[in-house]
Image 1 (cartoon, rainbow, N blue to C red):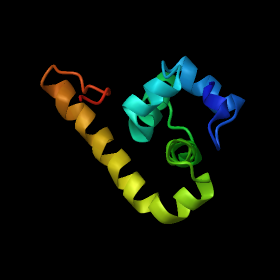
Image 2 (cartoon, rainbow, N blue to C red):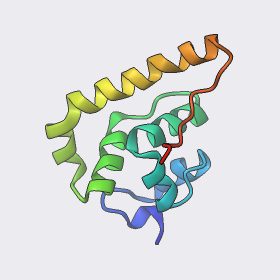
Image 3 (cartoon, rainbow, N blue to C red):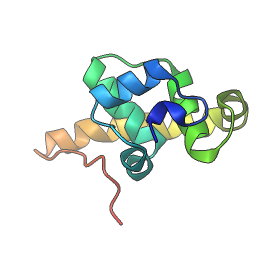
Amino acid sequence: MKLRNLPGLGPKSEQMLVAAGVDSITVLRQLGAIKAFIKVSQHQGKTPSLNLLYALVGALEGEHWLTIAKTQRAELVMALEGLQQLEPLFADEGKQLQLLARK
């Protein structure tokens, strides 16, 4: 199954994800929505719309992205900002923030 077959993701979202190295549903599930969103941001050199983040969460949870935006917006934005603030701290120590979740 292709990424675009997940609810709320289309060809443009799939293209951004694949270009950033998130090339399968398995990889998306391993990373989670926030880390996948960060990978897309890093690859593009700019932050995509938060609608992509909501769509990624919705795709993984089987919910429409508008529902995610209404119910989880504050939580997702805080988690995203937290991870983005951690990256420079790791860089200052000569380490790279690992984006793949450990099992």
